Image (cartoon, rainbow, N blue to C red):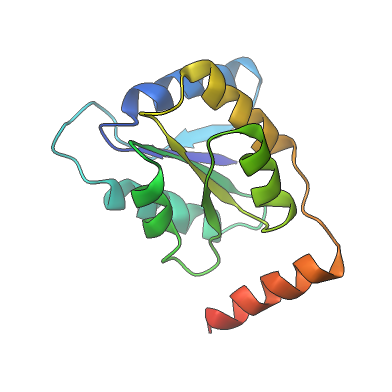
Length: 146
């Protein structure tokens, strides 16, 4: 399951990504915003997505805001979440491979829809590394959550 969340700055991009995911037969759930509201707050949607992703080992999240930073910072407050801001294929791929990211946050004011979809494809296709140094580092992150 892919959970989606966006504030006003990411709303339009999220809506475009939903169409792409549907076309690809990928199961998703939109946790908001349900409509464009310039007064909404990104922490509300980031927290909803992060909690859902943290509840299932196979769940992943896609967050959308202006820079990607606010959403990622908020999501990373939830135990079990490793959210990364991704703006190209390399950052999306490495976020999963090296850091086991289960959420990515996309900067909607930076990426065109086609670019965002390319980033999402890389994120969804990437597999976590089993190289010992990466495993060791993830274990250290988990220890910090205790």
